[in-house]
Image (cartoon, rainbow, N blue to C red; front, side):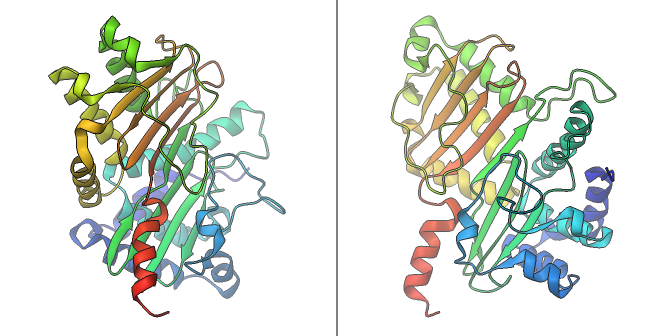
Length: 343
């Protein structure tokens, strides 16, 4: 298999996109997307671009999919890009992510190389098979982009010159912790795991009676890869039943998920969470507390859902997702946009 180093391409991309953080997020995304599109030939462009209303925009997933034929992902894979095109693709990704979010994304991609080696050069594993899609015309009134492959789906929607949505945002890690080899000890989603378990362990016995909703963890995140999700119910311990230290810890855990995206986008999201009612947040846990046992938790507010599941491969395989009940794919904002703007 042709080896592909996301780290090397990432460094080049950061050089290309060095000033992106100094500009408006939507404008930076549009420029980076157009810079990338301008390098594509006709066939590449046809593969990479869709109408903003195309059904593929909400047809997302985090599982491995075929690289060819029926069931393959839409978009242009890194495999089919030149090195300069890959660099510009990473430059676009960097316009939506925080520094840590960008690093995490490239680490997730690099884990496909680890799996390729662990699984005797399995043909379904490749760090080159992450697909970039552009929906609509970058810089227009309504458009979006997605980078997606195994264990990663990053989706941004822009409407009327503003970033309307950065969800669904899915990160996964297999292995959750690399147990051998030169990268032994790496835990790509370590903060999500460690802070989540530490918070659960901080609960008193009485608090755990509320927080623990099942002795056995579900097989996966309950929101799956549905295009639209609803509240999973109010089971769990409410924010108001927590101590001050625990409230601080919950905020820090929410930050881990939300601050994967660019700082000003994350700030807006945190303000929206606060405005909807921080006291209405509920934390739920399922499974055991030992780090080698299957476990699941979720944090849910009136407008959002964060889910974490570590249940596969001897509890060494993590799925973590951030969803917005009304705003995934900018659904709420685009609905208003299309209702008010002639197309």
